[in-house]
Length: 488
Image (cartoon, rainbow, N blue to C red):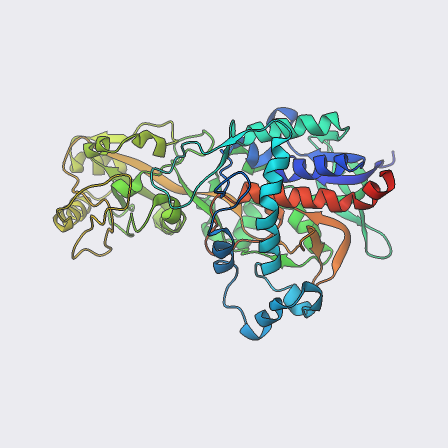
């Protein structure tokens, strides 16, 4: 029996926001499109299906004021100034080594920011509505625009549009490797169906199939052996095995993004629901398995500091810490908004009993809390803004919302780091075309969403869904450009 072969103009791998935007934009331009999805129809949508889909925008047409600056400030490691100065020139005049350096290109950041507003307007045309809704951040420094109905609303609206425009969906079908012609152009991909039978899909390829947070081997290879303490933030992440990144690297694509890192979010390991986050730790203290504090719990608004603090949790014994609170938590308006876990707090009427439940040395925990309580200073508590209510003479200090833990029963929420998305991926240009290791375009190959490497060090919050949508649409438009001219 031969390999089953289907021919299309564009073949898209992945059915999250990136793949759907790519498929719909290509189909709008007249392309015959195949969309491959590892999951079933009922679970399609990748991580997008499970997220609230925060967008770092101050209106439906404008990104936040710090959008480009934050991406640029976290755009790489220690970059060579003699090489970076070339980026003031047009991209086609950059030396090849600069085109393929692992950093966030200024041109790419600018293109991302400029396309965000038009992309949101385009998504609105399929019936998705957006608004500035309440978030799980009780304090925040930047605005967040949300689709009403979350990421699922976008998945369903775009999938319906794709179906209407004739996109053919292939569920439980996994992309495996790329097909090349004698000139090195990508002409399609190899895949397998749910019975592991080989399939060939011919056409230009757009990789929108996520990062590698669902692949233990790749996580350990890139992030390190402590990756055993990570888990995907939602069920969609388990489908992200990294094939899109791997198959492109295998044919000489340039890597980009921080392969050794990921977007960290604090979650309750007891919960199996999507994104069971714990964002109320700034109002209490965080202790590790040994019973010690290890970080300033509140150096800034929670939206700005949670990732760096979650990374510190990840580095503690067994990758776990505990948020300790007392009944003064009820002084905080709507504090349950900062809790997505469906599990109740571990509760006890004394620190000693709480320590036993947490299997933490009771004497150490008691001393930790006494030291903290005695370091808290008098002042006005302002729960919904930075209040400078800090500790004195304590290491590490607590910078805001420092109040003694005195009112039983005492509560504890276990917290681990989830892996929301991996940072390492492929280098692309402003048309979402994948570049090779010499800075040239790999003809016929595009990438979008998590497959694109853009983030370093600290994630620019509320940009990943937007990144998938923007580069997915750019990829679909460029891959179908000649078709659009032909059918015009």
